[in-house]
Amino acid sequence: MRNRIFSSTAVAAGLALVLTSCTSEDATVAGRTTDDAAVATDDGLEGEPGRGGWLCEHVNPAAVEAASGGEPVNPRQLVLQDDAEGWVCEVLTGEKGAQEPVVRLSILLGDEARATARERAEAAEGVEPGPEYLGRSYISDGLVTGLTTCTRPGATKRDDRVPHTIVAESLGEKDEATTKGLLAAAGQAAQGLDRGLGCSPKQAVIEQSEDAQGEGDDAATTTAP
Image 1 (cartoon, rainbow, N blue to C red):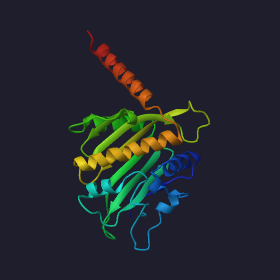
Image 2: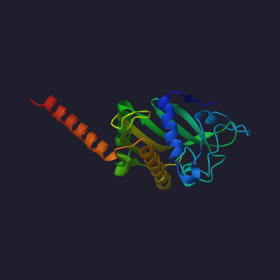
Image 3: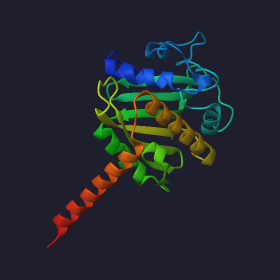
């Protein structure tokens, strides 16, 4: 049985509502709570089916099929984390007792999560810059990372902002088709965050470029004779 982490805090609820209210029209699940994801279906499989073939709010059927390497068996979505530090959902496929994750979509808050994701993304083989609508972003086979800045969930002021990190990754196939699907999922998530919270991807790019420049200046000062 996979671990699940749920939170009833206002912050977590704010993020969950943003995600469920801003998905594609066919995938919208009105009134769903994280508790629903913890209930196994009558067939004994973990997770829930989603709606219209869409899973984890933003992962479309084509992306699930690509990551699965073919027609997915019993695709389900399972929310692993929904708390003050972020939201993580996995797409599972397989028969009862043999389900395996094929896609993970994460939205993580804070500087530490951003630094960890950025380090991983920059170290990936064949990494390339991603689109600016994801903030400072990176694309490699099977991994899409977007580093942006949004209003803090539950905040009463728009200038109360916090780093938001979007990571869409394949735990199965990592080919071009899968990566394309992950990019679409990350874009959907970014759009939902912007509509629900208000984000500044361009400002995030500027800020992180300045941070990188500052790190370079510090290194030069340290090594100067």
